[in-house]
Length: 169
Image (cartoon, rainbow, N blue to C red; front, side, top):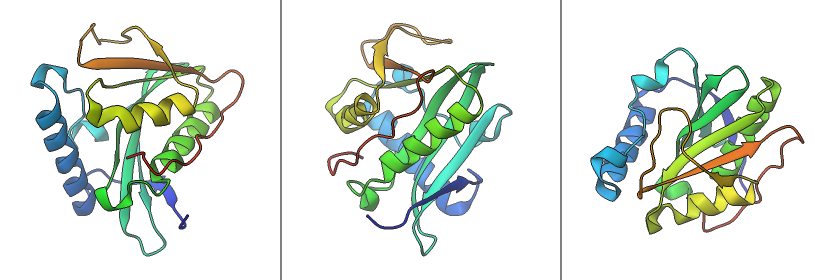
């Protein structure tokens, strides 16, 4: 795998804005509007949200991810997106490992996430399940939704980075 650097970044940066716009467009094309929980670039700058991008050795954008603090010991993975040309290259696994390491360092006991039930989201669900996430009920302000699946990972026993899989987004 190529060198991937995951670092704090600005969601308002031009190349990141383009990736986030693509992300939102795909979410609304894939799921009913009431089932889209992706954050827009402005929301990703709010207090309590950390935002990172993955870039290659040339600085090219490969993906992005955010972590929202739900409570003192709880976080939520948000806005994870890999650029189309970077899919299947381990970028999603690298970003997820970075976020889980960061969450552990903050003393979080759990990380939650919501993703879609459609086939489009199957690679993401596989990545999360390989990392140890388990299905759970809705958390925070989410409600039961046939288009959403909710996951939880307990961090008390440490973080196991997910293995690379060429089928992941």
